[in-house]
Structure formats: C-alpha cells, structure tokens
Image 1 (cartoon, one colour):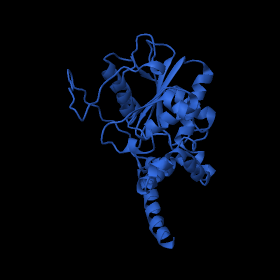
Image 2: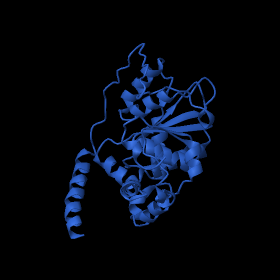
Image 3: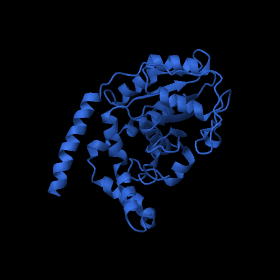
Image 4: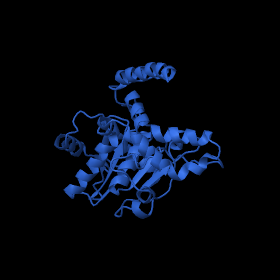
Length: 283
C-alpha cells in the first residue's frame, strides 16, 4: 500500500499541475475545411453511414435530424463562438439557418449559480423550426477535462479491467453496476457537485421550465457525448453522442441515478471502429 501511495502521489500531482497549466488554453479559432461534392463509399471494415434519425429523435417541420449534422455540431463545440457560428453558416449553406443563443446560456449561469464553472456548452436554435433547439457540449480539451473523465468513469473502467482479468469475469456483469455505485459512495460530495453533467442537466430543466422549446436535443463528442447521454437520460431528452463513453455500469453513480430503460430510449451513441473512448463502460 505504501508503495502504491508513493507511485500515485507524484502521478496525481503531475496531472493536477498539467490541469492548471492547460485549463485556460485558447479557444480553437481555426476553420473546418468542407469539401464540395465529396463522397465516401466506405469499405467493409470502416463504414460511417450518414443516416436520418427516427423515433424519439424526429423533429418535424423542415428539419430531418441527420447523424452527420450532430457530428459536425459536436466538433464545432470546441471552437470559439464567433468561429462556430461562421462554421454553422458554411455547413448549412444559409446564413443564420442555425444560430447560437449565447444569451440563454449566460442568463442560466447567472440565475442558477454556475458562473465561473468550467463546463462548456452552447444552445443552437433553428429559426425555421420554432421550438426546437440543440444543446452542444464540448468534449475533452485539457487536463482538467481529463480529470473529469476519470472522476465520472474511473470506477466503470476499473471494473471492466477486473472483469477482463478474472476467470469467467462476464458472470459478474449483472451486479457490476451496483459495485460501481458502492464505490461511488466513497467519493467526496464536493466533487459530485462540480461534475459537468449536473450543470447540463439543470440547463435542460431550466429550458423546459421556460416552455420556450417544444423539443430539445443534446449532443457532444467524447466526454461531451458522455455528458450529453447522462443529462439526456436524467431529463428524458434525446441525446446523440459521437464516440462517447457509455453508461450502463455507471448509471447508478450519477445524481440522480438513471435507469437502463432511460438509457435505451433516450440515448444514441455513434461508435467508430477502433475508437477507445466508447469502450469505456458497457453498452
């Protein structure tokens, strides 16, 4: 145990130092280069279909929710607001077809006490479809985000490793979500209060209380996708994740916990082959 402490202390200290150093990294102001008339035919072991979403994800009006639009929005969340708006105009081919509502986010943070939080997300509205909006959540960008990944998914990742190493480890799968929940009891409540999904969940509730939006979606890439799925399951809001970590082992560790049924109905995770992040937690 002493040897383990001697190893973990400098490692954790180094991670914290890197977190401080990268926390205020400059926003991405580079443009995404869009190729005209590009077609990807795919190969047998690497297909990325652009499909129209169905069931709970249908919007109505003039908008068809297409998977690649959410993938673009998730990537756009890493950029500065001005750059992100320009990229939306370029993507949809019409100026202000999709518009960032910065005021709604700022007002929420002020009213609900989230000023100064490190959570980064935006609200995109579509003037042609009143009452519909998409919350876009930024994924891992600096070491603070990486530490957040560990905080949220560390127990699930550890249990997956233990299951892999144990003989007949799959036999333990039906109870692993409860083991993860027990491990989470040991977590300091002050850490739980600053988890980013808490803020995005409250933001969804805030928007629904206002009654301005008849339908909300939430999306994100990587950690942002994981947060989107947690908040989506907690608020019964359709969530589209791009390469996000999954939820089934961790579902009882969240505050409030989420049910397997809510995960299956309200979340959708796009998992590219060979991507490590969606291998975290079970699906």
